[in-house]
Image 1 (cartoon, helix red, strand yellow):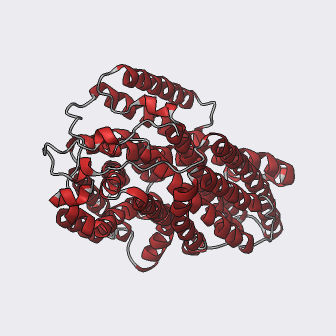
Image 2: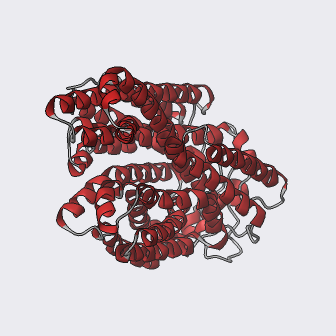
Image 3: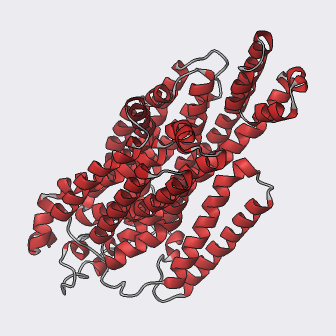
Amino acid sequence: MDTLNSLGLSQQVSERRWWIFAVVCLSLLVIVMDNTILNVALPTLARALGASESQLQWFVDAYTLVFAGLLLSAGSLCDRYGRRLVLMVGLLLFAGGSLWAMLSGSADLLIAARTVMGLGAALIMPSTLAIIAAVFSGPERGRAIGAWSGIAGLGIVIGPLVGGWLLDHFAWGSIFLINLPIVFVALVGTLWLVPESRDPEQAHLDPLGTLLSIAGLTALVWGLIEAPQRGWEDRQILTALGLALLLLLAFAIWEARTHRPMLDVRLFRNPRFSVASLVMTLTTFATFGVLLLLTQYLQFVVGQTPLQAGAALMPLVPTLLLGSIVAPRLNERLGPKLPVAIGLFIVAIGAGLLAFIQQGSGYSPVALMLLITGLGLGLVAAPAATSIMDALPVARAGVGSAVNDTTRQVGGALGVAVLGSVLSTVYRDALQQHAAAILGQLPPVLRAAVRDSIGKAIVVAGQLPPPAQALLRSAAERAFIEAFDRSALVTVSVLVVGALVALLFLPARARRQARVTNAVDLTPVGSPTTMKAREEEPSHDHS
């Protein structure tokens, strides 16, 4: 049966599907870019707003915390109230938060504005992938998801570059002002092109499940964000992580028992869903963790400016896009197992190159590592995301997208927390070995600063007489390189484990496409034919 020809609206949607794709990916790009654009602006914001170290951290974390904490609930809202409506509300909130941030006269107001931006981003991200799942079908859906994944990766990389360029030419408010014209174009395009779609069977909300998911994810992400600064043994960190575990366990139990769950936890019995979710978590663990390592290496050891460091990450982009183009075709022919496993092994090889960096290595090994890693990331992201989305009926695409997005955010927070902690711990121990004599001559306050990070060590070294300055700087760089190499080896270990899990448990063949996949979402809401395809699409296959 030709579903698109049998439904007038579906035929219209099919003809403009790539325009719809462009609109939702523009929406995706602006929120992902905002995840990293602020990193290069922190010194400028510290001077302009008189922000403390804690406030600077929360300029970034307020966005991430709300973004990650609300994703699952936002995905449920997409299915309940409509993906187009939720996308538009998210864009409006994001624009309002950006305007507020641009006009903020104090650090506290900027933190509040970033919270609103995080709320908007949480509504935008799952709706974009859910709309793609509704509009595309068959092999073309995998290609669209591959391109979506590539654009998500592109946004992470170009954020620091765009932020650095704007700060070189305009006032700090420009990093928020740039969002407004992008959001305006996305809003107009959504109104003009994107059809409404929702799950007609989800007539009721799941208030308790929503509350438990928000509280559990927020506690988890807060604990991961704060752990590197406070220490993993800190009472508040242990309380937050323990509370997160209890809340998420309660969420899983409730979702398994309620008649109308927000997330059907039985899906995790399906390796296509559960293993792909784990793979996505490990991939973003490596991506965000390695970006943390590289930005510090490039600025504090190689001596690049924030703008130069942002530009130095660009070799990742062409191979990332190449991998995102190739991966869907491999997934169609071979299934997700081989593309994902090979991609993770390639990323592990790239990360392994970092373990051989020494003082004086410069930028060349980083450029080679980025080229290799970009290809691997491109091969992993699309098949993993497609596997997650294919495990659910299209009517629940919002929740499927939210799971995919949540694994990205949690994995990224976990990567920064774990690798940041490894970096700090090894750096302090190595510095004590290489600079014990100099450290013993410093006042306690300066000694604590030097031990805290290489950035502070360089600042302190600049205050010392020339012989001591050179010795302290060299010792700090040597200690950082040792910590950098150790962190790279941890990353390699995580990626190899992920690749082995993919080889053992991901499906070895491509999933047979359902004969009818999109009628549920491409029919006007309320139509009697809306659920026609639901029974024909397998939602819990274990192939």
